[in-house]
Image 1 (cartoon, helix red, strand yellow):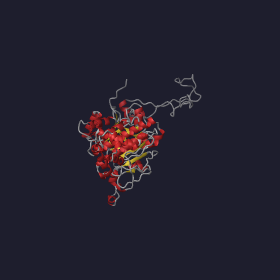
Image 2 (image 1 turned 135 degrees about the horizontal axis):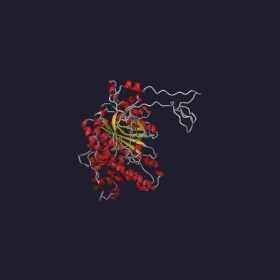
Image 3 (image 1 turned 120 degrees about the vertical axis):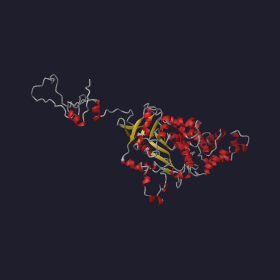
Length: 520
């Protein structure tokens, strides 16, 4: 029975009581043994025999033993408890509860049964360390062979990381020569001749379905709701343009202007195949979708997504980024349309890249894309559902849940899909938030009262603090740790500290060249 100590001792008294090890009994080489010694076995070295099957210790025996009440000894030697997260993947920082290192590898978490999918969603107010933690995660996952594709860097926050690694991001917008065909065939044309006819049919059906969804989403962005007839006609036109009607022998490149011209100058075969009474009926009924595609060709994004792709992604590089920071001057809708095109393109590129490697796809400010309409929300939803099968880690970055849930009216289909979309992200990383936003987090992610208090209190006290929550399991209070070099590289406030005179001299970040590394 443990003796209860009425008065607590000071640290000096504890060191006095337990600091001196007990005196060891000595033995003369030829003298008699003490009564407590056993003489019926050979005497072993004090540290044991240093050979296989024998005990050995770096400290001479006997070991010093301390005894005290738990409330006293805990002050000198805290009793640590493991957090249950395996030490594999990217080392993010430390778990403040246990004091141990905190690692993150969503694929490993799925394989070990800790969660059901590898997708991640990150929320946090500006300045809470959200972006630096994401960039640190990407950099450290490179050490275990995981590559990354930034599917639309709206603010250019990931560009410093690429420059530090000697990689040039692919810039789209003002002053850039880069062009990306939203209907690019990508790896489909490279692997086409190596597939069987059945595999060709399946892969082509998937790509054409993705293209139809993209075009209808772009139509919704301009205020037109496509009909079932529009989708059927678009599917037929795309099949004709890509060459699927000639027995799957060869694939032809397709662009948005090609689709628009095919609709505007419909021949007899097209309107008869799609069961219209005559050509005039076809043109009248398909005029809205035809005009929508024409606006994409001649609107704010003219030349960006309606010409053949003139660059190649270097899949051997640890990271690639599509920088959209130059498009912000063209308005929010232009950025949202660009994110939609990039989302569809990057999904197809990574899906068909048959190298068996795990990849991270970062969708920064994806809520902009989702506000274009139900089709855009469905496109993001379908990509997240396929992440587990396609060995992809999708990372969605936003400020608060309402960014995602404001895609439509309360109770609408798009809001319901958006809620399901958040549920498809098993890993939720919640940085500091205001009390009002914390109530949203508590409702959407079933946070306990203490977890909700963590996001409004503890997380707000220091940059880099976040509540890491895996589905419905208790959250982990994690402090991200950056090295000195990482702090300099990931500094998102660097522009605020620049010399003001440099802006007057044309030294802003939008004026630099953005030449991709490889051109075709």
